[in-house]
Image 1 (cartoon, each protein chain N blue to C red):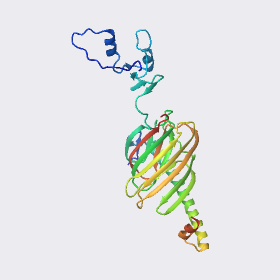
Image 2 (image 1 turned 135 degrees about the vertical axis):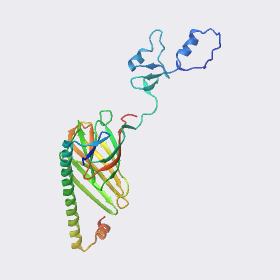
Image 3 (image 1 turned 180 degrees about the vertical axis):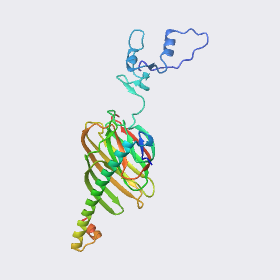
Length: 66
Length: 242
């Protein structure tokens, strides 16, 4: 089934060229989102590692440092 | 008392002889209609024409506007709206992308976009600036954002090939409001996003971001990172005058 685009107010099927360009865009966007999520997860893990060394929970750290 | 001030609103009787003064009262009432400001200005002040004075009204056909003369200049009737709709509410259904062209111009510097949508999932809704019907898809979007999900607050800073203006909800429509600053100016375009989505009863997302190219954009595209979206959008220009 063809993907649909709303082109300035009109819902229509994408052309083959538009669909290929759209799928390429999605791959690019999803790769960026994955990289961002991994960076975020690494940041959280690093913070948790410090808290673990200090013997603090996340809530206790928030209470102390905001 | 100005030249247009009336002291009576006369009624003539059958058989009455009308003087030039009587006829002038009739001829000068009502709002005269002119094709343009040029023909309007040419219609007053010469021999045999009325003297332009405070209180004079005029209707202009080319702009479909009514004006009044304040004694020094012509002024529009009524207040200038702060927001002017440049793209009426537009519906979309089950689409993978949305193209919005020719909404930015030199008429306004800043714009507001409202989007209400249901996603087929909870994927991010991304946005790219656009000119001449072509997306700018290079990695030129510098983004700083904040997510508030329950008591958890997280932030991010990244550069990517699109803005993110929200994501799909699981419990009702997602709503995004996007302020565009200078999209049509040949300079960096800045946006500020506020998004609410009903995930676990509430999730707020803010993003302030810039597209770093010195480009004059005339539109934008909306692209869910996966799946489809259904909803409406509308675009408004911020008035530059009071």
